[in-house]
Length: 166
Image 1 (cartoon, rainbow, N blue to C red):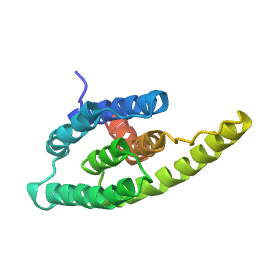
Image 2 (cartoon, helix red, strand yellow):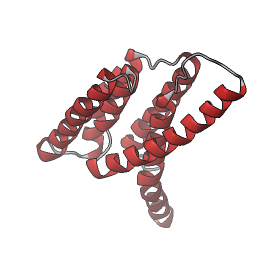
Image 3 (cartoon, rainbow, N blue to C red):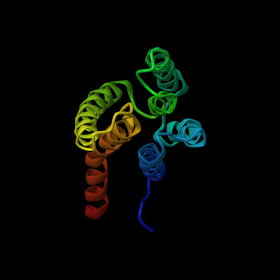
């Protein structure tokens, strides 16, 4: 039986959850609370599988999530961001290390900008007069998937090569 690292199964589940979040945000402009809760509640299982220590690793993740929630709750209060988006980012902060989370925010902003331009052009082309609603969960999910792919693709490749060499 081949060696299998349980955390890759958890990362796969996170990737599926992010795809669901992006899809529901595109279709309904809503990210379900149960999905955000599932992402947040499963983070400690990932910490255990990844070998995080309670101090400082888990505490850093919780601190990052609290900081993310505080900052993006202000954006929600200003009506610049939806509540589901804030909860999704907070839940992702429990999974992603602080240095990678900063990269996630940069990619999220870039994808969100492109998404806003594309939807704005589509909105104008269709001559709609209502307010433009951007499904920012798509940008968040895309950035999360990018982090998962870039952070762990080298690890998976190296682990696969090492297993194949045995």
